[in-house]
Figure (cartoon, rainbow, N blue to C red):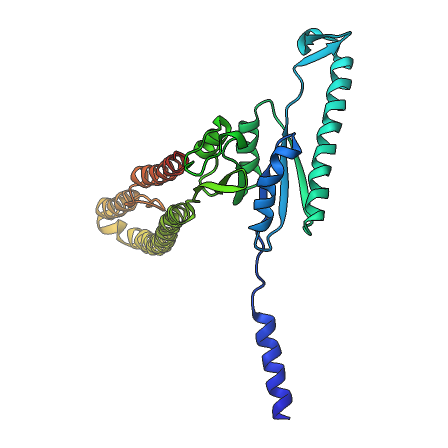
Length: 301
């Protein structure tokens, strides 16, 4: 019986253990598969069990070929432009499928993602932001620029992504199958700023709640005072009727004085009186701006 009980407790403890979260690694590739397989191979070998998503930015054609001559898309019939671009998009999907087959040959199951944008680097930055990508791999330069002494990014696309991509994304730049540069994510700083803003807003909310309770308490006290004054005025009216034989003007004067005092009762206090609402609003906005500027600064190398 003790053994059974011990087994049950162990099972409960095992069930309570949190599951390990897998992070998806996004890998940018180009249209020429032969020139990108070395970088993709590096990504697969260093995936550490994480899922792989292959990203290819598709740029819609701006020049449409007609009878051996290319024309600007803005000057060509919309149906012809749509048909040609659809054909090019199909080719892009086939290129992605070829990358998926390459991954299968290496023993990996990967996903594909086609991003449509006129600019490759801007498409990558936007994708990282929209998908909230935490791990990303892309080329540092074309393979012909590789050397054993290479340490800096050579590709304008890589430099743009390194500078403008979300600060929360960890990016590794590869060339000819070698790691050239790593841009670390700024998660600790971003989380610290978010926590600071959350704590400040919670403090303000708590203080507002306390002042609201004080306001309710003050209202109750004022209601009690008004009730006492009404009772007092009723008694005074009766006394005035009795004393009218001996000096009605004095009784009336007494009642008038009491009514005058009641009419000058203190106005109801505001829920946040004494808090300095202007200052609180300023501090909240300043904290938000500080957070936004800090994140923007982290985007710079």
